[in-house]
Length: 79
Picture 1 (cartoon, helix red, strand yellow):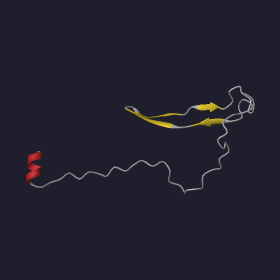
Picture 2: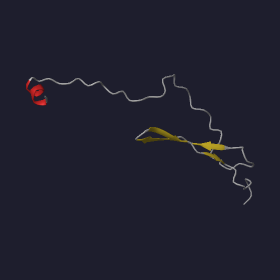
Picture 3: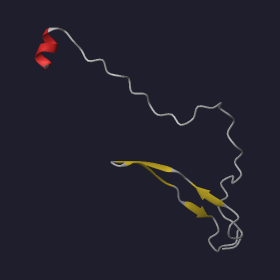
């Protein structure tokens, strides 16, 4: 089949693959930086941080979202 198609200069038309884009709304300004690189909290549940990581697996996409409480038992300003 390939040989015959090549002799006749026939080419299979492939559909263009569109890159995935999750955001189709209007672009806004970035939110204010509320932490300002101060990652110590004086009490539990005062400052939480998170990050989202996307993994490509054979079964599809998977996401990891750890949540970190900035309180580690140390009071800010004391060793």
